[in-house]
Amino acid sequence: MSVVPSILFGSKSGKVWVMLAALLLLGAVSCATAAPAPAATVAAATPSTELSEELNDGQDAISPLLATTLLRTGTQRVSFLLVSPTALVKAPEAAVTSSYLDGDSGISETTQAVFHLWPYAIRGAYSTELTFNQPGRWQLDISVDDAEFSGNTQLLLQVAGQVIVPDIGAIPPQSKTKTLESEGGLKTLTTDFSPDPDLYLLSVEEAINDGKPAVIVFASPAFCTSPTCGPQVDTVAELKDEHFGEANFVHVEVYDNPEEIQGDLSQARITQAVTEWGFDQIPHWLNESWTYVLDSDGRVYQKFEGYVTLEELEEALQGVAAKGSSPFIQ
Image (cartoon, rainbow, N blue to C red):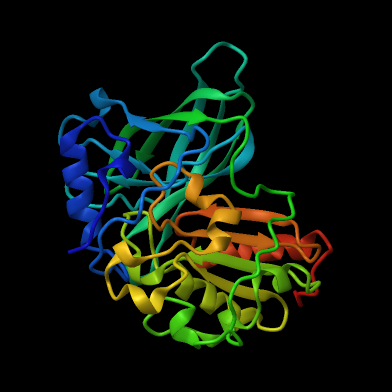
């Protein structure tokens, strides 16, 4: 049985949790029998989300699920899923208007969030870029007006002044992660049932200093248990096949001893790189994937919390190329 912790849903309503779990677990990918991961140490406050209950009553109600929970001031990607009482909402676009709730100093904006279908065509999420010019409470008014479905909902966000993971523009920790040359082979490197050896040719440290752009994904394929979790390592491997030699691609397994776990996360040890990059300091973090795109100088160009599609990763890599620090062939 797959484990999906209710804390991830940020909902006041039990019926929303039941509906999301029932709909989204039908499309769970690479989930394994597992107990929840050991609780992470909380070192800093993290943004929280809530649903406005009055907008989630009735047959046409939409229930949102925020995929990007770690938000800070500035411009960044915001991603969310939308669920109706009967199905995942897959309208091509959703209108999103942000507003600041802690005074009149916030700058409101309206954007169109684009729907991205995930592999296997079961799940998908909306994403857009939003700018939060003040820390504190923000509200997103979300509207869908499509031939098949229309409705409105809200997300309440807590935006921090800064985040506890490597941010855009920073050079991340140069972690000495294990590679194919490490003792024990692939079984000691990943929980993936059919791993791509190319993702373990370099350590994180080597990828950062190699002079090429890099895509680094932190994920545990066999323990992908939340509704915002997808086959991220497979997607990065697909991107690698398209750009092999032009950029470096590295998968970092969340757990340091995958060969010893055997489906029992009580035996798991968090890999050192996860701690160095700060992921285990995120409250309620549970195996959620993080994918980073670095430029050829080793600086973070874009970061993605939760599942990110091949299309979005391709766009980020082309963005690195456009800034003139990439050898990509256009």
